[in-house]
Length: 383
View 1 (spheres, rainbow, N blue to C red):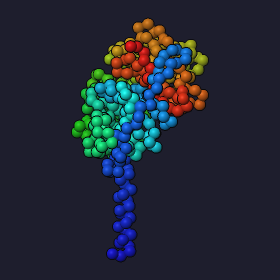
View 2 (cartoon, one colour):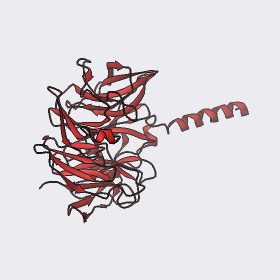
View 3 (cartoon, helix red, strand yellow):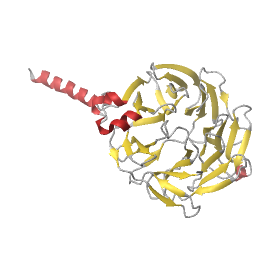
View 4 (cartoon, one colour):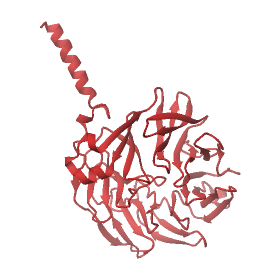
């Protein structure tokens, strides 16, 4: 073998070896931490202002962050909460038991992206690079560190050529169809993906940057999405059917409003916040609002300077956070609001609470920087 040929062979070998580290390209090089167990970190304290008992599910020095409030945070059986953490040196997904507090690592990829839990089975879809994966949460929890790559996840499909994923993945109430937004050059599109067959189809092409795709939790084929600007868009909230029909504004903005952080609320409405960006706006309707799916009528729940909002599945309660780290609970029939817990964004904090309700409506899950690092917490709102 000549030196030149030997050098060429080594170069090819190294190139192939390095390619195994690309996320999803070589399963054997990943997954070594999947199933790893961490002892419970759960502790409780009583809020000094409200008297509410707050359960801190994580207390490690790591940055532990919940899934965004627009998406499910609990597994379908309600037994685990999935969160994102850098406790192993890179950001990965973990599950914490709601009964024992034990923590299990779910992913060990090179940069896992957005994730969405199924509402019908204990599975998690997530992106990594250009691949979309279907992860069996039960298999990881059951097998622990003995899990093999072939037994705990399935590569659904790679993104179509010349497209870039943007924003969140969302799964239809049928548990099978995924919706996602992509960029194609200078244009944007909403796609539907059959996660069993691995086939994409275009729902709608739009002329603006799409974000926050949210499948309705119970009505199959109904999608809410937003005009994403990173700030105040001219028309934030949009709605469309999975076949591309009925596309248009959901809540149509009527004056200089800053509408943001929309989320489905029960079967027939959506919550959002109207941020009062100046003194003039404080004199107009603002705070937590909702829009009816039927007649698109606007309703104001409570006029405080809220930023994020979440609602229970029954459509009876809403919860909003403030830039000061307060969480207020609002009763929908009466509009009465009460401070639930506070102190979660001390000076210099970088994370928002992003509150959301448990599936049974008994608790609110949120992120806190009360102790100087990001922690995932629960506070009960009813017994």
